[in-house]
Length: 298
Image (cartoon, rainbow, N blue to C red; front, side, top):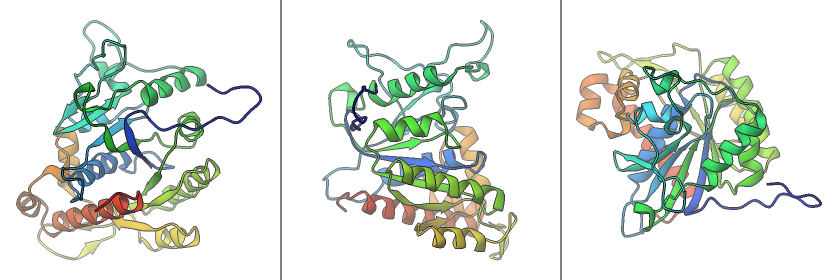
């Protein structure tokens, strides 16, 4: 907690080497889907560690957690260690933590997804601090910690990103947008916010940049030209990590709890044609650039 008479001292997240925030100024641009798939792409990086990188996912969207659904863990409860720390829930080999695992059901017969969080700022800050500092990310609660923790941020520039930036050493941030001007206006604000709290911007990802129908190879820019996005990132001197096409299988995978990055390349091509192959290559290249920017050995 802040102390009187001096600045807040940022500290690393326990058992985490590098922290990467994935954010967007505007909700509904596919940020959480990108964050989860980016985490898996990072976990599949070739490295000189002598093992696969250990990557985790932290869902900091207190009011609208999406990671439980995207990971097929909607009905899971977070266990505790004997000392009272939260233990991540693992699926598809990746440890995850989310407010969605901690919510009580609103009524006896209701689903946890129906429970609404109606909190003011101080309670939100306390929940964020618990998710940041009271999770034991070690393998099995006693093994290796994480090489990278991907933090799925809520949209906007409110209490949660401010609390994160003030309390935690964040090693990079990826900003997700779609081509529309209404999304790009909030991207500017998001980049400005991270710079104000001294979080380095790793780069941007343009989601739903275009659609390639399975029977052709012509890009269809359903949500407008990416030219404005490229202009904004150039003006703000922020790298573009990739432009992901709109792919049906990504949505299906998110709803079924099987991230698209885990789908076999042959199945992606069969289901989504050229768009599936392009999506996979763009995500892999984006993950490689993020890995290198965080100073990880490759």
